[in-house]
Amino acid sequence: MKMKKKVNNRGFMLVETLIVTVFVMGVFTLIYTNYFPLIGEYERYKDYDTVESTYVTYWAKAIATKGLPDSVYSEVSSTGYKDVSDCNLYIDNSAASDCFAYKAVNNITKIYLTTYDTTKFKNYVKDNSLYTRDFQEYIAYLPTYSRNTSKASYYRVIVEYDKDFVHQYGNMEVYHG
Image (tube, rainbow, N blue to C red):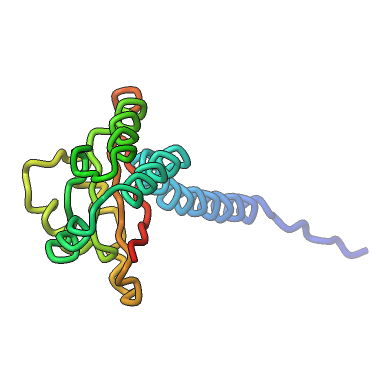
Protein backbone atom coordinates (compact mmCIF):
# COMPACT_ATOMS: atom_id res chain seq x y z
CA MET A 1 0.00 0.00 0.00
CA LYS A 2 1.10 3.37 -0.95
CA MET A 3 0.77 6.14 1.56
CA LYS A 4 -0.47 9.46 0.37
CA LYS A 5 1.40 12.47 1.51
CA LYS A 6 -0.75 15.15 3.12
CA VAL A 7 -0.14 18.61 1.66
CA ASN A 8 0.35 21.43 4.16
CA ASN A 9 -1.99 24.32 3.09
CA ARG A 10 -1.58 26.57 6.12
CA GLY A 11 0.68 29.10 4.37
CA PHE A 12 -1.61 29.37 1.37
CA MET A 13 -4.56 30.40 3.56
CA LEU A 14 -2.49 33.18 5.17
CA VAL A 15 -1.41 34.57 1.79
CA GLU A 16 -4.97 34.42 0.48
CA THR A 17 -6.26 36.34 3.54
CA LEU A 18 -3.58 39.01 3.10
CA ILE A 19 -4.43 39.48 -0.59
CA VAL A 20 -8.15 39.86 0.14
CA THR A 21 -7.43 42.30 2.99
CA VAL A 22 -5.22 44.47 0.77
CA PHE A 23 -7.88 44.43 -1.96
CA VAL A 24 -10.66 45.44 0.46
CA MET A 25 -8.50 48.22 1.96
CA GLY A 26 -7.75 49.49 -1.56
CA VAL A 27 -11.46 49.65 -2.36
CA PHE A 28 -12.21 51.50 0.90
CA THR A 29 -9.36 53.95 0.21
CA LEU A 30 -10.70 54.60 -3.28
CA ILE A 31 -14.20 55.22 -1.93
CA TYR A 32 -12.90 57.47 0.86
CA THR A 33 -10.75 59.64 -1.43
CA ASN A 34 -13.56 60.12 -3.96
CA TYR A 35 -16.61 60.34 -1.71
CA PHE A 36 -15.58 62.86 0.92
CA PRO A 37 -14.59 65.65 -1.49
CA LEU A 38 -18.09 65.35 -2.97
CA ILE A 39 -19.59 65.83 0.48
CA GLY A 40 -17.41 68.93 0.94
CA GLU A 41 -18.57 70.36 -2.40
CA TYR A 42 -22.18 69.72 -1.43
CA GLU A 43 -21.75 71.48 1.92
CA ARG A 44 -20.07 74.41 0.20
CA TYR A 45 -22.71 74.93 -2.50
CA LYS A 46 -25.90 73.79 -0.76
CA ASP A 47 -27.17 77.39 -0.42
CA TYR A 48 -26.71 78.15 -4.14
CA ASP A 49 -29.53 77.94 -6.66
CA THR A 50 -31.95 75.95 -4.55
CA VAL A 51 -35.60 75.57 -5.46
CA GLU A 52 -36.47 78.34 -3.02
CA SER A 53 -33.83 80.70 -4.43
CA THR A 54 -35.08 80.02 -7.95
CA TYR A 55 -38.59 80.97 -6.81
CA VAL A 56 -37.33 84.12 -5.09
CA THR A 57 -35.26 85.03 -8.17
CA TYR A 58 -38.23 84.47 -10.47
CA TRP A 59 -40.09 87.32 -8.78
CA ALA A 60 -37.05 89.59 -9.08
CA LYS A 61 -37.02 88.76 -12.78
CA ALA A 62 -40.73 89.58 -13.09
CA ILE A 63 -40.31 92.94 -11.36
CA ALA A 64 -37.22 93.81 -13.41
CA THR A 65 -38.96 92.92 -16.66
CA LYS A 66 -42.01 94.93 -15.71
CA GLY A 67 -40.52 98.11 -14.32
CA LEU A 68 -36.91 98.82 -15.28
CA PRO A 69 -36.44 101.50 -17.93
CA ASP A 70 -34.54 100.86 -21.14
CA SER A 71 -31.73 103.14 -19.93
CA VAL A 72 -30.86 100.62 -17.19
CA TYR A 73 -30.59 97.81 -19.73
CA SER A 74 -28.36 99.92 -22.00
CA GLU A 75 -26.16 100.81 -19.00
CA VAL A 76 -25.89 97.13 -18.15
CA SER A 77 -24.97 96.35 -21.76
CA SER A 78 -22.09 98.83 -21.62
CA THR A 79 -20.79 98.22 -18.08
CA GLY A 80 -21.73 94.55 -17.70
CA TYR A 81 -23.76 94.92 -14.50
CA LYS A 82 -25.90 97.23 -12.36
CA ASP A 83 -27.19 97.09 -8.81
CA VAL A 84 -30.97 97.35 -9.17
CA SER A 85 -31.76 96.91 -5.47
CA ASP A 86 -32.99 100.51 -5.24
CA CYS A 87 -36.72 100.32 -5.86
CA ASN A 88 -36.78 103.97 -6.96
CA LEU A 89 -35.12 102.88 -10.24
CA TYR A 90 -38.36 101.30 -11.40
CA ILE A 91 -40.41 103.66 -13.56
CA ASP A 92 -43.71 101.86 -13.22
CA ASN A 93 -45.37 102.73 -9.86
CA SER A 94 -46.76 99.24 -9.40
CA ALA A 95 -43.31 97.76 -10.11
CA ALA A 96 -41.76 100.06 -7.52
CA SER A 97 -44.33 99.10 -4.88
CA ASP A 98 -43.92 95.42 -5.85
CA CYS A 99 -40.16 95.86 -5.41
CA PHE A 100 -40.51 97.29 -1.90
CA ALA A 101 -42.92 94.51 -0.87
CA TYR A 102 -40.78 91.82 -2.50
CA LYS A 103 -37.64 92.98 -0.69
CA ALA A 104 -39.41 93.16 2.66
CA VAL A 105 -41.08 89.76 2.46
CA ASN A 106 -38.03 87.85 1.18
CA ASN A 107 -35.29 89.67 3.16
CA ILE A 108 -33.58 90.69 -0.09
CA THR A 109 -30.20 92.34 0.45
CA LYS A 110 -29.08 92.84 -3.17
CA ILE A 111 -30.42 92.49 -6.69
CA TYR A 112 -28.00 92.73 -9.62
CA LEU A 113 -28.74 92.86 -13.30
CA THR A 114 -25.87 91.65 -15.49
CA THR A 115 -25.33 90.86 -19.11
CA TYR A 116 -25.95 87.26 -20.08
CA ASP A 117 -22.18 86.76 -20.22
CA THR A 118 -21.19 87.38 -16.60
CA THR A 119 -17.43 87.71 -17.22
CA LYS A 120 -17.27 91.48 -16.53
CA PHE A 121 -19.29 91.14 -13.34
CA LYS A 122 -17.20 88.20 -12.15
CA ASN A 123 -13.99 90.18 -12.67
CA TYR A 124 -15.43 93.21 -10.89
CA VAL A 125 -16.61 91.23 -7.85
CA LYS A 126 -13.40 89.22 -7.64
CA ASP A 127 -11.24 92.34 -7.38
CA ASN A 128 -13.57 94.35 -5.13
CA SER A 129 -13.34 94.15 -1.35
CA LEU A 130 -16.81 95.71 -0.91
CA TYR A 131 -18.44 92.31 -1.39
CA THR A 132 -18.60 89.58 1.22
CA ARG A 133 -16.55 86.46 0.76
CA ASP A 134 -19.75 84.41 0.44
CA PHE A 135 -20.96 86.56 -2.44
CA GLN A 136 -17.54 86.46 -4.14
CA GLU A 137 -17.55 82.65 -3.88
CA TYR A 138 -21.05 82.46 -5.35
CA ILE A 139 -20.14 84.67 -8.29
CA ALA A 140 -16.98 82.63 -8.87
CA TYR A 141 -19.14 79.47 -8.77
CA LEU A 142 -21.41 80.73 -11.57
CA PRO A 143 -20.56 79.81 -15.15
CA THR A 144 -19.71 82.74 -17.42
CA TYR A 145 -22.35 81.79 -20.01
CA SER A 146 -19.93 83.26 -22.57
CA ARG A 147 -20.32 80.53 -25.20
CA ASN A 148 -23.85 81.47 -26.11
CA THR A 149 -23.40 84.64 -28.16
CA SER A 150 -26.92 84.53 -29.62
CA LYS A 151 -28.40 85.83 -26.34
CA ALA A 152 -27.85 89.55 -27.06
CA SER A 153 -31.25 90.56 -25.65
CA TYR A 154 -30.85 88.40 -22.57
CA TYR A 155 -29.59 89.45 -19.16
CA ARG A 156 -29.17 87.75 -15.80
CA VAL A 157 -30.70 88.79 -12.50
CA ILE A 158 -28.73 87.73 -9.41
CA VAL A 159 -30.41 87.90 -6.01
CA GLU A 160 -28.89 87.75 -2.55
CA TYR A 161 -31.26 87.23 0.37
CA ASP A 162 -31.08 86.16 4.00
CA LYS A 163 -32.79 83.10 5.36
CA ASP A 164 -32.19 82.15 8.98
CA PHE A 165 -29.15 84.47 9.11
CA VAL A 166 -27.50 82.72 6.14
CA HIS A 167 -26.93 84.42 2.79
CA GLN A 168 -28.53 82.51 -0.05
CA TYR A 169 -28.26 83.23 -3.76
CA GLY A 170 -30.11 82.66 -6.98
CA ASN A 171 -29.83 83.72 -10.60
CA MET A 172 -32.06 83.60 -13.63
CA GLU A 173 -32.05 84.89 -17.17
CA VAL A 174 -34.15 87.89 -18.14
CA TYR A 175 -35.29 88.67 -21.66
CA HIS A 176 -35.51 92.32 -22.65
CA GLY A 177 -36.25 92.86 -26.28
